[in-house]
Image 1: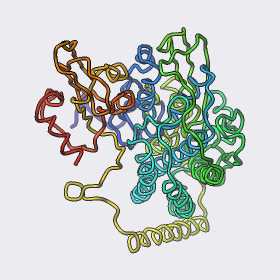
Image 2: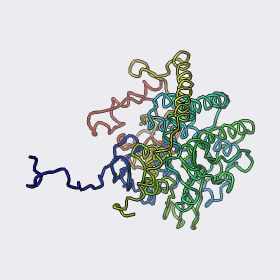
Image 3: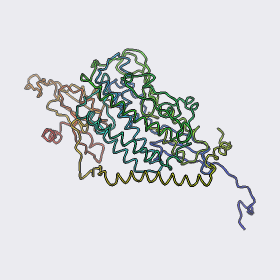
Length: 383
Length: 179
């Protein structure tokens, strides 16, 4: 006879059930960085998910308080390392707003082009890694092949492949030459074809649709409540893009559409919608790039910025539309050579905070799809 | 949310158990097979037409662009010890010591014609700390501090990453880089 705790086992006893605690991360490949999510599961279904942050905290905000304004740019790069140019652009706009610097037209064109190329590179990275999360490997290689073209152009312009330090206060570092412009144009042509191919390969695939449609639904109300921005907000069917609503740079003169999720394969705001918004956004970026290539004019690339930089005392908040959402810099200056206080509002941080509400009732495999679809970079979450 | 409140799980579970009819079942299979075939045809096109782009690194080396920011090199003969690079450095990895030059000593000039008024006693860069941002090379008035395109300089200890640019073996890089 089997005995449990000294009592004979009859098979009629009620087995006590409890939730299983599982740690996902910090070294899980599907979390795109060092994010640890503590999951309480009932068999395969998640009851609760608690994200634990701080594994990549580098004290950025305190650290830049004793670094001069030009020296901050390399640190800004390291926040969202997949979209460094967009981070730099936001910071440069913040300081320029305080200084009242005028940026030459050619530099503005270059900034828009670089920003849109960076958006394509970042979304390609999303496309590749998201396909890997859901079990398809070859799209990742195709995406990297195209991303390589962009990185090669960036490498020639700035000298680095990932952490560029290219957009400076008052302008940009290096000028672009005709050969590079031609290559950007060729890239636009190639990319338009490739994106259609990629969507047929991944987005229309039945397995992919089953994994993503109706999964991780972020309703419009939820997106508003949590303060979601960027593709996550637009995926929930909200027509909001800072490039359109609060135009900075040259976006006022450029013609492009704001993409929003329509729930083509399931509900509005599911993972498939967020994927599709990003895919269509790349088409819009190509449209912007084409207009810039037509409009770019000769001229200087650096505005007038004093060599010893002292920013007048005051306070400014500037936000830009980055590939992952809205990035805000709150800069306080006391008139010295270094920032008095700098606060960064990161979009990924708000998106991570949506996970506990998205997770309950999801299967673990779907949770991977949900994390992938909000496209977080932990460098930006922790700063 | 209380963890023992599992009613939400039952409501969400329904999502995974959608009603299947025979027609739906067969349609699902048809859609899955046809989309997979479409995807595979794209993949096969890549297999047959696109040439490999991966570079087999140690055997084949890609040439970096001219303004690529890799290992730093300071041509100490042209350095005027102005300390601007050390000031610009955001991670403070450049260490410079200089003393005032004797009045009797022969007068020195850089290649550009700037008089050298200080004797450089130490010029060390801790490459392990360097973040390769390029701000020091922009600040340099005599353009003696430059980024080279060398990128293979891994070492076994941290101490070996500290470069003393007054040492003769590092000075010899000048000829390698210029030629």
